[in-house]
Image (tube, rainbow, N blue to C red; front, side):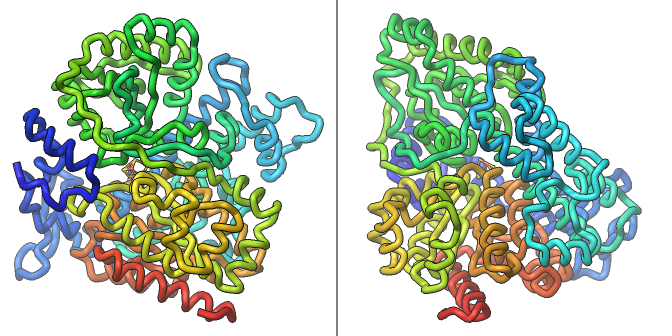
Length: 624
Ligand code: NFS
């Protein structure tokens, strides 16, 4: 095992890394260490195994092997790989969205009693926003019509996605001119798979443009549908207090961790954990209750809507099990390291999978459907209670004290706090007390010191009176750093601090999970429409400082495609192509109004973002 220094900035992580060593448990950092030195061809996107004439490696420098067997050069090879990378990310968010839609449709058709429409007003509002008759109609008729409309968005039947009606006119015109208006969600993903088959699209730039279209189908399609329908089914988030870090696990309770993405499973577990008979069984087993805590994005979902504490982010998932205090981890899909099953087996921890599309060898599979979810959730909780009786107290170590956080800043909640219109925020931006807004989003990556870039970038930005909104795994970092409470405003610049104080809000607002980046897109569209400008004119930026996943690449690309300058802590595997790299770092600026910047150092990244915001402010006639 390698040295434990510099792996994470947190004490709870450090104690669990030490315990992992003591318990002989391997973690993601050990495996990364074993996988070094990575293949230089793959790292640059220059290897291809998409057909059986290969696999090929493109050697740009040598005089041999400059082309794959099919004749593809470096540009084409990189573009094909990147196109598929983005398509996989868009598919993941969107298929999660489809599962929420299936649940919503089951409710609308009266096929399940396990879920309800909790925010009827939002359902009516969205239905009428999308041109469906809503007044006077019974609620399930409206729900059925909305479900139909969204299913159509997944198909090849429409010329453009429903939610494009939210996008400022100038932006839509730009997309139409470039031929990147997203049509159907599934269609764009399938077309990307087609285009990147051997002998279809051989123009690297053309593939990149379709990657833009595919990413937009995620942001304004799959992700936005996931967010809006989850609100309708489980309630639109309102500001709530909660707690974060491994200290949220309880010595005296049955600890159940929900991990994965869709709120369908985690919300049901939560609901079943309130059943009196289940609680009585827990008491009989000697526990003082059932403690549900979240990990990763499904953790963000139940945190936003129900104030359920977050145990940790991506790199904390293995460490959470190493506490020896977790009775059961229940998962749906995405970002669930397969290693978790092996680690669970080192302790008394049960590992439960719930989706037929995401099975984990060694796990107990309890298939959830919209129709049976509640019964299955009860079954899972009973397994957890049983496991509690087998917990070995001598192997339990719960590190540290939980940190207080505030969550629940949906756009609805933000606008309500501002008195119903975005005008007070626009005024604050105009006078410069809030110089701009930056979304810090995304994962952890073991190649970077855990949460170092997240926390330092956020601190640097708020110091400069830049309001930060956060989603996904970055949330945990902000919470642990004390930035998700109103008191965090003490670390902000004078302007931002005064705004936070007046409104009683933190300098970093938690706006949800990764699909909830759609909320940020929507907010930018609301601001741009109110100002009568394009989204690319706003003093805003995005950052995924420690990203790792295909989904994060899709998010970064849709942000840029909406005209939002996007910082990445490390590059995707595209550096083998000058054409694709230049397009990402510069070329997109001219065609789409924004580009990527790659910078691992959070202090330098803050400078870059600050400069961008100043430029945008000046162009709007404001003080930089
Ligand atoms: Ni986003 Fe969520 Fe976390 Fe990254 Fe994974 S949980 S969808 S991909 S690792 S932020």
